[in-house]
Length: 292
Image (cartoon, rainbow, N blue to C red):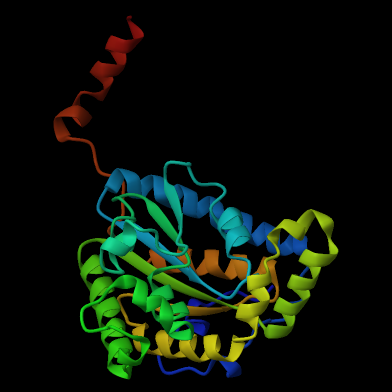
């Protein structure tokens, strides 16, 4: 199977989502893809153990994608080898009353990973320039000074939010949080097939929501705003990766491989060395324990 190069998916210049692949059509069976994924996720798990001992970096993995793009299963499969204390997953839904009493980034800031750990945002702070652009009436719930009606939300409002998000990400990366952002790029046809499966297979009926169809009707709007958000916020310190998602197995492997390859750039992540006095007396300590 062809090796994965993170640079093939990294957004380093303006993109058009309509021109990017949603399926690589890799000639490999499911077992081969699973073997590749298993190898990488074991290495990621070992890396997190070293990170915990090193205690200087946290890693934030941001996942965005339309309904049915496979974010939940991707999280399960990519991080299944991790110590359960080494990764925390946050799924950001409609802000609750407490969250609405703060600015829109507050709930994301308090969910950032501790040093030595991974955090996964399943839907992220980008919902605030995606869903709210498709449904600007949601902004009214934030009770923002100067925004009394939807008509008060001008293009500059969204430009300011993009800048605020860039500044938020720059701030946290300068303070030890490694940020990797993934857009799970699903085709409209594949989404249709997955929604149909939810209706046709009884065991998956519970996953279906009428709201999925309402949001699907706004597909073009969502793609437009995803594209604008990605182009405006893919930076060297918090890059976006657009990953083909029609093939779930391949998508999971690509995300895992990108995380692994990008983490290799942080060559300072190492287990701390023992204090010289402790190191000099290891044999003594062994002898004390053996004689108990």
